[in-house]
Structure formats: C-alpha cells, structure tokens
Amino acid sequence: MDQPLKGIKVIDCTSALAGPYCTLLLGDMGAEVIKIEEPKAGDLLRKQVPFIKGEGAYFLYTNRNKKSITLNLQGERGRNILLKLAQKADIFVENFRPQVKHRLRIDYATLKEKNPGLIYCSISGFGQTGPLADRAGFDQIAQGMSGLMSVTGFPGSGPTRVGVAIGDSICGIFAVYGILAALVARNRTGVGQFIETSLLEGLVAVLGFQVANYFATEKAPLQLGNNHGAVAPYGTFKAKDAYINIAAGTQQMWERLCRVLGTEDLIQDSRFRTIADRVKNKDELKDILDDQLQEKISEEWVKTLNEEGIPCGSIYTIDQVFNDKQVLHQKMLSEADHSSAGKIKMVGFPVKMSHTPCKITLPPPCLGEHTEEILEGLGFSDEAIKELRQSGVI
Image (cartoon, rainbow, N blue to C red; front, side):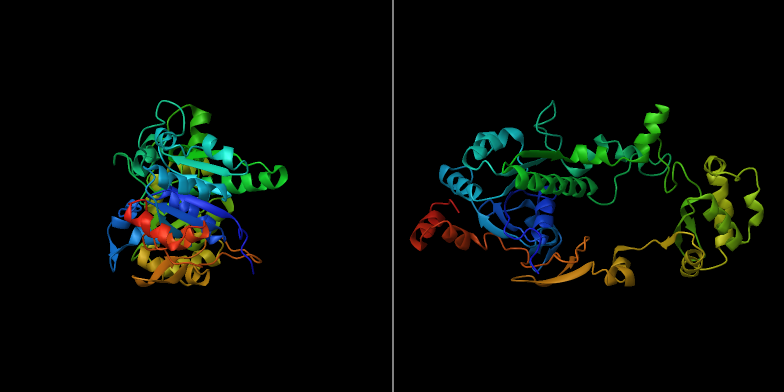
C-alpha cells in the first residue's frame, strides 16, 4: 500500500541528530527526502566513531530513506540549485543558526516568495529569536539548561545527563509534529507556513510531573534517583540476581504486592498506609522490599508480579533489548543492505499503521550518491553536471 506521505518532497538541510531524525521519520512515512550535504565533508556524523566498514554508524542510524546530493551553498551556483529544489518541494527543514541562513539567503521569507505553499521548519538549540538565538546548541547543553539534569541522578551525585541524546530526539519528534499539522492546514488553506522548534523548548515541554511539582510548591524538585516523586513503591529494587523495576502505582497494587511478598502486615503499618505515607518513608520501604525480593531471581519475580497485576519489568542492557521477544515481535529490529557497509541493523518503526505502513525503501546514502539523479531531474545535462563537479559546486 502507499505510504502516508507518498508524493511529499522534503529538502533536508540538516546535520547531526535533531534535524536528521526529523527527516528520517518523514522518510519512513514515505516522503521523498533529499539530503543536502557539503562536498567532501558531508554530515558531521559521517566521521563520528564507531564505523561499520568505513561508514559512520551514527550517520547510518539517522539517515535511511533519503537521497544525498552534495552542494556548495557558499557559492551562488550551489545556492541557485538549492532554490530550484525548494521551488518544487513541500517541506524544507534546516538547522543553521539564524544568521547563517539569512547570510546564505535561504531563509523562509526568501523561499516563500518562490513557493508560497512551502512548509519551512527551523530546528535550533534555543530558538530563532531572543538573547541565545545564535548560540550553538548541543544535546547536553540543552539537557542542562532545561532543568532535566538537575532532576536526573541520585541525591548527592551532582547533575546527571540522560544516557541518550534525548533532547535531539524529542526536538526532531516535535518538528515532525509541527510539520504534519502544517500539512493538514495547507490542505485546507493552500498556504504553507514557518515552523520552529528547539532542543531547549522540547525538553522543557516534557519535564512532566517535575514541573507540576514546582508549580504547586514553588520549590525546585530534587534528584530522586530511580524513585518517583509522587508514588511509592515505584522504582528499582534488588532481586536475588539483578535489579528490577516495580511500579505499584495504586493502593490496590500496593496491597497485592504486599500479599505476594508475604508482608501483609505492611498494609496497616502507619508508615506505609497511604501513598503519601509511602512516599515520605520510601527509603525505609525500599530496604524492606529489597530484603523480601532476595528470595527469588529477577525473572521469577517479573513473571509472578505481572501475573498478579503488579507492573514489573526487567532492566535490560542494550544487547538484551534486541533479543527480547516482545521487542522482536513488534519488529523494532530491522535490516537494510548498504552499498558499502553491507547488511546493517537498524531500529524499526515505533509507530505501526494498518493501511499505510512505514517502510525502508532506501538504505542510508553514501555521500552524494544521488547527486546526478537529482540534477538530471532538474534538467541538467551530463556535460553540465561534469562541469559543476569540476568547479566544486557539487
């Protein structure tokens, strides 16, 4: 079946992770994504370790379902080719600093004149205006400035980064969210629009119960380790062989947990009678539960507790994740054949669609792999393409 974004053309002027992750998701949904890269250098992730037969693994992870063309945007001829591509595009995504895109004259106001229906998405570290607009933004910097690092880690550990580039990924997802909404609006009005999002905004938007806590108390939340700030027992506990997560989020779950563990006396214990009591005395409660959990290995507890309706799960290493039966059943491990790296493993599609499913139609491209194909589509002859290459335009 046709994919949901079949027929939609995307010009991708992004590098690193947030922008490429946005366009990856659009490509997975069937959009034709044309990735613009610098001649010789390309996306900076192409040179980041580790490598798979010479190809940057991080680049391969974020750039399937795209075509690559190299263009020197510092010169007028390269810029003019980009403008021709943008004239025929539905979506334009970039992550230049604000002053750079204006200097290159590929800002929204310029492109809108030639293509009023264009949906133009700017991704940045901190936004397009304001005192920090032109500051370079990276995931860890945004994690720190968003408040996320202040509530991550254990008491006394100091600020702690989330173990993945969560700011980049969330920013890319919010960008897709805005782009798809703009496509719906364009279907109704025929007019495109300018969209912007940033690493900082995306992380602030998902601070969740920590923000609710602050708004309610006017006190900055503290680090809680693996505990929850409003529910207990809800966190990481030690079984005989390994740690497991238990989330007894309701009074009924708590009482069932006590019965399964053989600690029914705790139900009426004044220290743990209500959720508020258990949160107040969570450290004492954890010690008691850890002692009881030593009776069985983690796998047994995960099975038993879930059978009793008590949310519980293993804590996997990454290699274990991609051997888990549920992860494999949901097809979150996929493969693609790359022209130089060979068969490569890829993360599957997190959204399943019954009539218009996501697909891998193209492996991650080699640098400039589709330059000739794209230029021929714009009407350039073989001789003209050869001259562009000799002149360093491509």
